[in-house]
Length: 359
Ligand code: MRU
Image 1: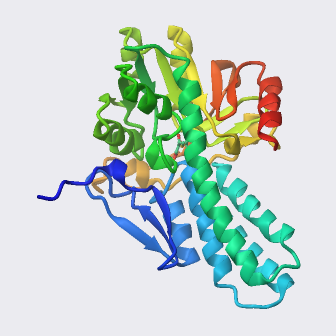
Image 2: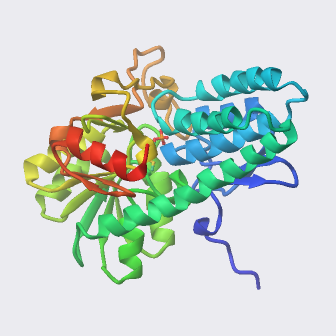
Image 3: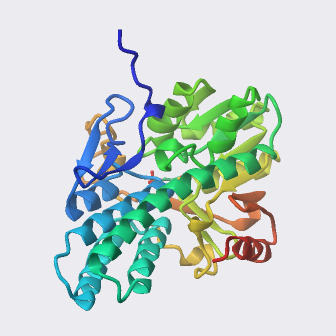
């Protein structure tokens, strides 16, 4: 008898060197079906990122790094300047797939640095260096998430109730997730957490992805609608909130899935610590405050038709569908990074983290 594979046995993002393809789990089909997509063209990769087949800030960065390597591999020229021009075209195209998660441009810029620093080397060697850098970005993501797990776990105690919003889990990273990393580590160590997952309208990342991956790993998970968070907090069932983020401004304002700032306001009201888990690749030191973060607007159908593609609202109704919101730094108890825990004042503590990571 063959044992059924768990969702945790799949890689969220992988590079297939035989087929020269980016391999992802199609997250639009989860939890009903686990389908792998083998993406070879730039268009396919752009569409996968744009339609959330691969999503979550670190996973988008990992996918883009592999995507730009695959694009570079296809550039046939012996001329470095021509190669660089076409590399930059492909980079701009991939970068346009989603606007809010800074990991996308962070990963693409890091790949561009490889090309710039390798000027003078044979292009075949530069392509191999790009391959190695893409693999390194993904491998580092695993290390980063495990460190966030270690730091995050110091903030909670055995038996705590934890609440999370959206999916900042394994499905949003190369492994462990960011907001979920302390949960997975605590679970391994017998902490006995009770996790509440907000369903996360309109795309239901909490219901479809977070509650799926955490329960598949044996954690005690309760799914709630977004409008129930206040209730479970009031009942005293939540001792800490952990969320991921798509971009942290230099002052600590953090953009994450729409609804996150509401959860932060509730947490403040009930006196519950609110932790943002952020790899340093998600910190955008060039953006001073959250006001400078571009918020993605998504198609109205996500709100009017939901997943079973049946209209739940009048035809042609005006819809406002921002995919993210910005949580003010004053609502954030701490930002957990792979280089330690930053607390207010964030303009100072994030610079300290920056020094540690050498950016
Ligand atoms: O629109 P999504 O599903 O890409 O939004 C994802 C989130 O908001 C995550 O919380 C964030 O990217 C952090 S993932 C570690």
